[in-house]
Length: 455
Length: 94
Image 1 (cartoon, chains in turn yellow, orange):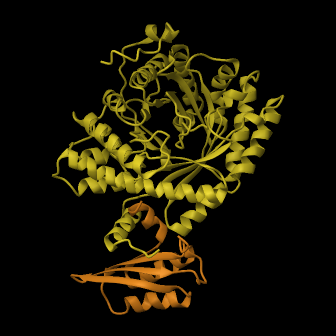
Image 2: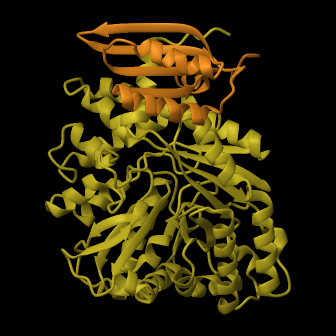
């Protein structure tokens, strides 16, 4: 087959890679560990460790080889496992910490920076394993460095488990206190979900769902910088036309993920799962979703109009990406974390972006309130109430929502938390100080919503 | 698709000067990389070249070639990239 790509097309691709930060954000290998359960935690942990080593030993090498050969940066290689709570029945929370440490060791030994799946799905209620796992989260996230945890507290079909919502406020507080010497970094590895997806490759919320095969590869692509430059090049066109440009660009970004996914899957002999076509910002300048929204014509993200701009961006990315890959899944959309996006940070510092506006934006974006630092003295009930609000948005709108808050110990509004690396830094944001505690302490379940009479 | 994976695309961007193509093609010849096509333009002194090369007889890994050409690029004050052809196919054709 002759090479029939035009010079302009070649140069466009080169520009995306060289100057616009196009990259594969993550190759995440999902591994089923349901067969690893043994009579005690030590043995179970060893089984999980061996299984991870057996499947993922070549993951990092293959990722690095593809990066070198094809000249596409592959930023992270990661692992997700079956939610540990599924195999946790009759284990104590101390025993689950031991299993968490085996996960951490496995991640370190295969060379991945994060491993997801210290997770429980409790949207309808707890079994004993779920309760023990949730109890074990604060200590596990303190004694490990690579383990990520998530808890699904609500779904559109089951409603919201307010017992779990109430408890997660306390768990988040405890996690931040235990990792207080590091600005509460444990909370950066803990996500509370509504409508969690089973094939998400992005941390901290990745786990290998129980509907997934034995082992699978999910790819997270990114490229806010590429979309940003496409939008900046068209300052005067109408929004319909702009949506088309974003679609075309998202298509090209996603194709790169599709290619890497196929090559990696072939080399590792593991079935290709999905491409998650999310715009995941990083602290790097220009790799920002906030900058895209601002280049669409907002003086600052957070201004009125931000929700509409984000809705269009999110939808156009999905439309372009869906065409580009045979299997699209995961979270797919635009992420709006604060600490990982320099544009978001600038808007918060300028007073333009509040937690309330971020909440509104989560109604139309891919996930939720992500990587937001709040004052260390925020009551657990207030954190639970923020979770409840996000879960309600997800439940009613049939979408995934999530909360990843860091109540930074000893910090007040205007102070900074510093995590470094991909997690970035964030200004501590104000939360509404009126107490929701009586509402939260009622507990129980918020019933599943009706699916007709949609208004 | 029998030839898939056997070609690389080299792009060169920068200010025009004597000997750019000579320097790069000497590098490639030494590593037994065959040039199939060169598309070069100069616009207001700015040099742009896209080169399609056959690497089936190469004596070097692509990553190492990229490193060598990067160094060459620094010497000549040019931006040189080396990419596998597949990425262009995937991105621009279905």
